[in-house]
Image (cartoon, rainbow, N blue to C red; front, side):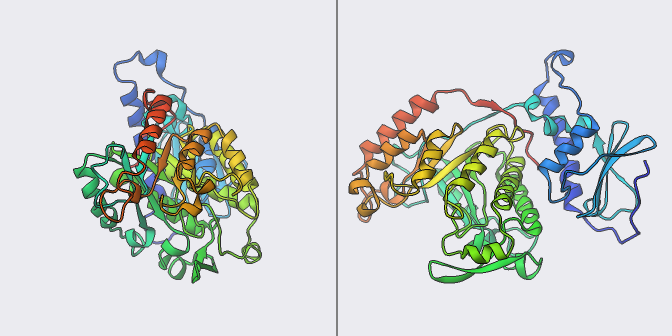
Length: 450
């Protein structure tokens, strides 16, 4: 195959080539496992053609293959060129090749597999795998006295991206592993949320790799907010997701993964403290924000194949239109298999806060997850100062899962000490009837990258 050659340069490791090779291999492996012992001729899905393969590459990894680009032809092969990144993807017969920075600046096209190796990636519905989605009450953080609570089904564990990757490509996952010790000892499930944005993004992302950022203040503290749509930001978020999945993607007790965002606090979808005029001067548009959210969601879903995920939503740019578009496209994206649900971390029982977005959530047909806005003794945060209203609202919205604060699972001084156990049990009983006794849903989920 003779795609245009690049000038010779010293080859260097290319994370893009690694994931393509690894994903191609694991896609084939997943296919073989899923079809073991079954009539091969009857169940083998069709091999994608070159057009489908290149369309998938553009949709799944726009940072490397920003499209759409036209398909060009040479003697015995077809290819697409991406001038913005200098990359090429091509197919000769049934062999798939890469050229350009994604292939380590190699002087010749690099073979990364056959079209058949990409079946589970290009047509994931053909390789459907069961996803064990969580339901019931999880604590929103660990606590010393929560693990014996009979209504505790799991715990949300959090860490800042900067603590997990102190230098580019050098990971230290001990901030999560330390929290996992008690969770595992108690035999509980867990959820994962890694914060970025201003508080959690590593300084090297901007200072070393040149990611664009704007100044803002979060809770009165001056910070820098990396731009969600920046190519470097998206590439590094994808690499972060791959490393997290390498560590915990096969852990059956990990039930939910939140998509990391470039927002005010890096997990929730709001931009509180951000001057939108400054954001727009830096290039913000609603379309760019939606595209960035979808790209990050796809990266996390690709890494955590077979896991349920959630994207937290708030009003953006003064209204509910942007989060509504994000949720609609997440639900419609066939490559995600409806694994990425909506999260609302401001469950309060009130209907006057982000009312339009509440309506969007009420009509959203995908999975929905919630976190209570405050602990139960902060009564002014709840509708009619009644903590019970959050559980009523959760049922009305159809949330399969709620995270009360650890305070409300605790025992002894400085905790709710059982005051709301009846409400916790009632929600778990309701969620069990609605979601808990359903078999694991078979959805489109390629094998995890390792």
